[in-house]
Image (cartoon, rainbow, N blue to C red):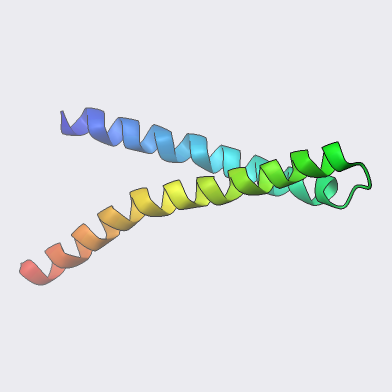
Length: 74
């Protein structure tokens, strides 16, 4: 069960990492456009970037906190 949890967690981090990097690549070219629809797509990529960063942070933070406390327990 733990291997399955780790595999799902790793896959989730990988997917959101790729989405975050793609949105980081795309939004600077789209936000500054004069066309309102194109700028809206750019701001959508900014939202996707912030969401991806938040998901990755929340998933990694728990493991780092848990492992940090385990070092002091032993």
